[in-house]
Image (cartoon, rainbow, N blue to C red):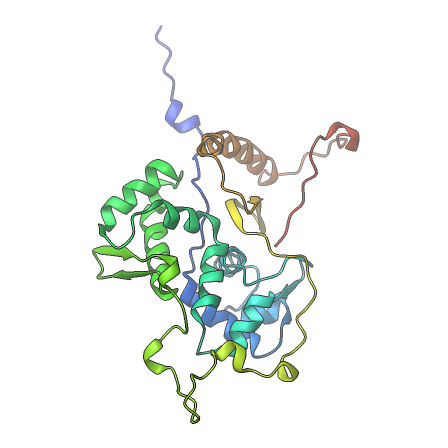
Length: 288
C-alpha cells in the first residue's frame, strides 16, 4: 500500500518581513488630520479621523502599524493613540514640511532604510530589479513584494530621496537633501535674508507641549498574524542593522505563530496552568 502525503496542505503559510503598507505621504497626511485635534486620542476617535467606522478593522490596525513604523506614534497605552514628537512637528509645519522632518520619518522605518542604504545612488534602477532584490535579501513574501516596492518608492520620492517615472527609480544621496520639501516655494525675507524653514519659524511659545512618552525606536522587523478579534504580533525594535541570518529564522517563527493561531481560533480555548514566570528567559510584551 502506498501512503500519500499532502505536505503542501499541512505546511503553514509563511509570512515575509513586515513593512509599512501605508506609504509615508499618506501616513503624514493622515497624522496631520488627526493631529489638528490634539496629540492624544482614543482608539475610536483616531479611527474616525482616519475614515474608519470602527477601531477593530484590520485596515485601521494596519494603518496604526504603518504609522509606528514611520515613527509617528509614540509607544504607551494600548487604549490611546499618542502622536510622537516628530508627528507633532509635522502637524505644526503642515503643509510646508522640511526635508529633515521627512528624512527622519523615512529613516524610522528600518527595513526601508536598509534597502535605501544598500542600493545604488544616482543611477536609474528598474523596479523589477528592485523587486527581485527585496525578495532575495530582505525576506519579503512573494505576494507582498509589489506592495513593498510601491510603498518604498512612493515614500522615498515624498522624502526627496528618489525620483521615479513608474518603471524605474533613481535614488539620491542623503547628503544632497537639505532645506524644505519644495525649494521653489522658499520665501525670501524682506530684509534680504532667507526665510527660516517652516518647522523653525513657529515660535516656541506657540508650540503645544510634546507628550512625554517612551522614545520611539525604529522597527527593524515586524510580523503579524490575524486572529479572531485581534492579531499575533512579533516586533524587533533596534537602531542597529539586523544581520542577514536573522531572516532565516522568519520561517521558524511563522510556524510557531501558526500553531498559536490554531489554538486561539479553535472552537474553544484550552485552559491550562501557565508556565511559572521563572521558566521564561525573555520578557515579552505587546503594543498596539
